[in-house]
Length: 433
Image (cartoon, rainbow, N blue to C red):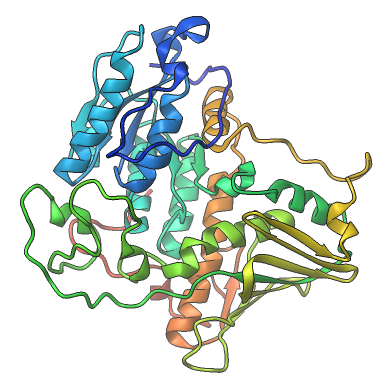
């Protein structure tokens, strides 16, 4: 097991063949000049083996010679077996010492594997907080998919757990590593002052979640449905929420309030994150959240920040920054400004330059070794999704909310304390630190 006195490394997103496709073994797995001794490899477990695990996390991590995936945890028997097969087949073709891949249904059992250094959490966000806290308690570093949490209370607990246990947590906000476009360049342009004073940011993403009203279905054996639900209310099985076996699409649990924050959270976790990053708000948040006047509207909520900045939910895809000298829009594959020179003119020597991430997973692995904070640290992830959570509360209750981002609570009793969290099914209580 690698200790906390580790070195540094990290790599870039590669979309791999989905689970049904033939396995392609990354060259790094095959050893050679890049061979890393077993004692120097970071051992990792995967919690949740759906599309993101198969298409992104597993193939990326298999490409690192200083990493070994040693365990998988998944409540669906077929997905679990397929993940283990892919990993063991990859390592079987490599001249490196490997003891096999453990296979677990319950993440708590997997976290008892003392030889693991870190975990990658790829479950629905209603599970994230519990799994992050338990991993931190077990002394493991964490990569957790975005959105980092489902509730405001969970965000605070995750920040406290990571700091108290001195863990490294990377939120899966890959746009900070310039995956899918020129996000770092856009942030450098804005931080260099080319837009002047930014007055508003429009964030064009989907709407808030709705209550789950799906009809029940008969379930074939091989899925621990009770463990899939976890803290969420007990309800009959639905293949819309958890399709059986290995699938090639994103299941629609994201749409429902019991498990996720809707389209608002799904892509909002990416684009509000870029707005915060560009405006250096990673340790801040809105002070007032105002719902739209139309009681049926699912866009239009406004977030007011100290100093006068306003972020608005709605507009073209991605982020549209409006400043006193012009506008800039950034989205996946889009970087444009008005006037055009704001984005087209190369940055000068005196303008802001941010560190280049070597890739989101690689940055995380490097930070596990160096013990530095990664590009999408736990606080950035928690404060980004807190914006979405506050907006979703404003949509749900059609009420203006005043928020104290420093105290992480509602200001002036503008909302009941119960809105910080949600009802939970036994035995899955909100973790206590």
